[in-house]
Length: 163
Image (cartoon, rainbow, N blue to C red; front, side, top):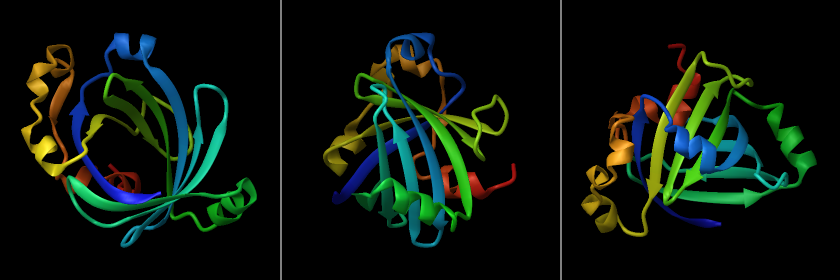
């Protein structure tokens, strides 16, 4: 699937218990094959136990980026993983129109080397610009700051950083 990704992201202090308890959960392993022209592999294990293998191509950018995602066979995924430059693992909780994410560098979910963030996708740039997170008081307590345009928090950059 090809298209524009329009999203905003916020750094979280914690993920609300209600989200962990009631949100749909997914698990993903991500391998980066290229950083300049972002190319990544993802093994996505869904709540129902099914697994998708995806290769993604993304252009640089902030809130708006071009993105192409293609489903690939498991054996192609396994072969391409041998070219991985860096990896992370993630747990996603989908709750209302938000995605809460815990991401860890490397290949294990641990309380170390982790980042917690919230994202929301939009249909148009105008919708994203008008969006006011403060309308969701239950989320605001756990939000540290908006990281939509902060390059340090782009997953390709965060994953390969040592801090």
